[in-house]
Length: 298
Image (cartoon, rainbow, N blue to C red; front, side, top):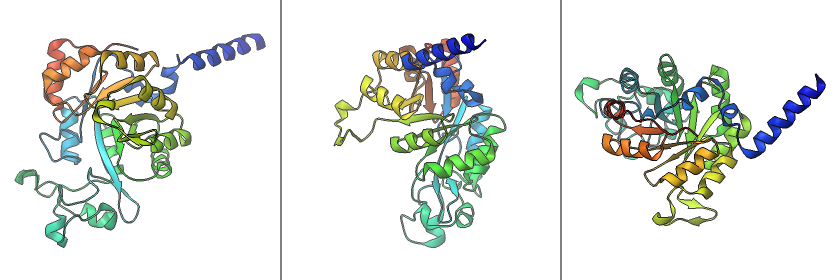
């Protein structure tokens, strides 16, 4: 028995060293969702082509359109509450300017009570008048009732987010991504079971600014993302089959943002992309189904 356990441990250590344990690194409901065969359709800020972004109506429409995951963004309010909004200012997607005057009113300058009292729907269309900015907790609860949430951290520390996820029992039920790779590293260290994605390309890398020609997904980027503890590479259109294959060989998934052209989505999936982040999950889902598109498995 002891010999058997020792042999199993040895096999696991060798497997970990050669990078063939990606499924163990993405356990739980969120990991299962990410590892589904075939391309995932991920609703960007909800079904943001049909409803005001990052609001409960946009999330509900995304779920109704059978999006595999629903993405949202968050910032912290003045009193430290994560609220769901993309910009660091309130001007574009709420009536903050009309209510308080001035411009570029920072999310962090207002309390959560003030922010959730704003109208976050009328800017999109009259029928959405009165729609509010949700807190992160309320938004995730609404999505998780029927689906899976992709949380994009725009601002805030990893410790606060990990503590919130642990309190709500969501650690292995949601996916977290960020353009801030040090945030991703910190989140992984605090919660190794959390499924994490690193967004790219970065503006700077290894101490210098990158030219556009240097921002295509490459083996170097993929290796660093793996070292962070992330299992998801979330990139723009600058991907090719070789880079995707490299990620797959490391047991990682590749998602691409923000794709609203169904034909372009099908082309990316043909390259091997595992997930499409889109403002129009309905059309993308229909196109991929009609094309019989299936992502390559790592």
